[in-house]
Image (cartoon, rainbow, N blue to C red; front, side, top):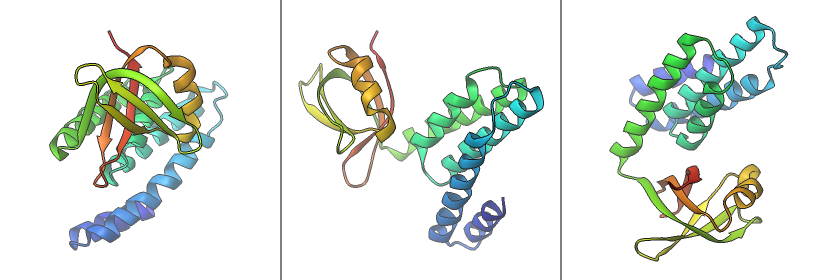
Length: 176
């Protein structure tokens, strides 16, 4: 939390670059702590894990790592989190969606996976409407599961367009 405090101080001083760097460091440490908590089933341990996940998701939003935030929110809402965590994560998810839309780099489409490149953690999707093909960056640890689960199916992609023009996957699901 020390890094989060430093980030807030830097932000108040107008140093956005330092603020983002401190938020990123705080996020990495909080995420590591959250995911290292043993899921032994003890209520107090479980609650602590959910609290850390909520905190890590919030820090991810603060440093612009929206894909990580979305993944942590999903983890935090799975299982049986305490009611207050469900409420806070739901509020954070709403805030995250609003931020993505406000940034103008929100990307959504329906298409079919036409190829996958595990070495570069990318999939190619052909959009149904325009027939355009898009290259989507996916988390390295998820590419095999994405291909296994969605190959040749109609999928809905949600992602974030980066300044470089690349698209980073936020969510993939079978299209209705």
